Length: 392
Image (cartoon, rainbow, N blue to C red):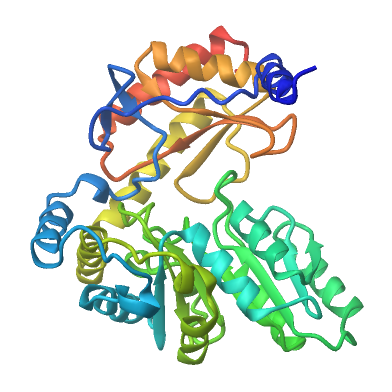
């Protein structure tokens, strides 16, 4: 037996179980309609909530960023990689989020890896929602703190866990996603904060799918619940609703100053490139001026969901534009996705380990770029294939 035969065997198992990920290739800018594997299809798959990924204002800003600052920073932030653009973005993000300060990172994933191990260590406790994103899970593991999982979106379960460990001498960190990316449900942050405050725990929320979606003009889950000043750390991403790439932490200046000294991705990985930062600044400026695109996003989400529910589809627990079309069996979900593509729709199947076994789905991502005709076509096609495969 060869030393790499285990890889061949595991890949074969994934194919048999319908869990092998078929990676398609995009040949155009992101938008309502895109070119995928050489075909023009309706895009119901990307996180481009507001259409910023191909917005002319962001593209012009990126080009100007290159002209003024070049294509790369050529250093980590702490040595020679902090440019004026980085400081401008962080100041604008802090103002937008209504917090004291912000620090930007290379990605939302890196933001969690940077923050959690900097705040807690092996003598401390992390209270983590059982369905938190992989980046939170990895950040928790890197910290070497004891991880205590509480039941999904359940403040009573969180309180029971905090009470159980109330005499533990170490620091306590409560961390949750704001919007859960696979189900589209919203963490009850108001109640989570109330519970965490009783035990003097540090409160952290990863709002990757809430930025640009929830709150006034997309200011996120803290704004949505009116919790300004009560959540210590807000993690955001700039690769979803903001349409570019990068991540950030917003909150108290004391924490941001500390992350400047302790966050390893900040200390040991090169800064985000000038065109990316310039485009992110443009996105923040647009949302600071108007929430029109956010309103269009929600209008589209309500319209599509109603059509899908009328057809008899199970959309799970979604409270946001994330629309999981629940299938159950991974093989059926994969077949459903393939048939959608044949009919002109790009919407990927998602199965284990991204979601639990038996909970496979087609995750539809609604965008402000979709027209009503696009959404009608999407629902009609879903209905046709749903009947064909016995899903509805």
